[in-house]
Length: 224
Picture 1 (cartoon, rainbow, N blue to C red):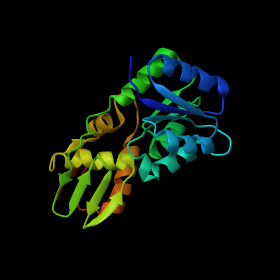
Picture 2: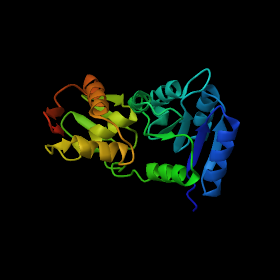
Picture 3: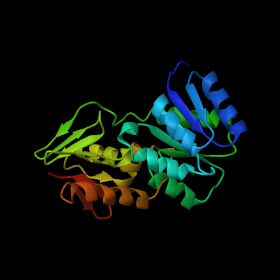
């Protein structure tokens, strides 16, 4: 497989870095590694990865903290983030997704399962189209992950942007929660209604309440 996709691995355990790097490189990925969050941020800036794999439990800057930092920077819009954890607690997984991770992968790792999760992330192209959506006071640009609202340009975190773009792609259509979860997070990632609600709330804080309408007990729709 000749993917040429760039993957950055950030993990403080040398054997994990070596194991993941070996299996990804063998399958055609271009790989760089970092041993902590600070180095990971530097390498993300210079390497421009398509996917970043972050260990949650790292000294100094944790994977959660690094994920937050990456999601706060417009230059990383579009990058996919998979959290790597040995912990099975729901709260850890929810926290990872709420700070902007696209997936989480649990240890111990099996090469075939790990590679399938990474490839599944790369296949999430349903809403990664190049057509801007234009409404009276709102323009949604999927290339820059920016919106223009009342002639003011705003950068949105990846998940908030994807939810808005999905809803706005079919104004008036009610998107059920399961459909939103499937299209934005993928079928292999299990998240709850709380995750969607958090992202919708943050989105409304930035664009106002009028564009995204809640259909109680069903889901959401875009109105203008």
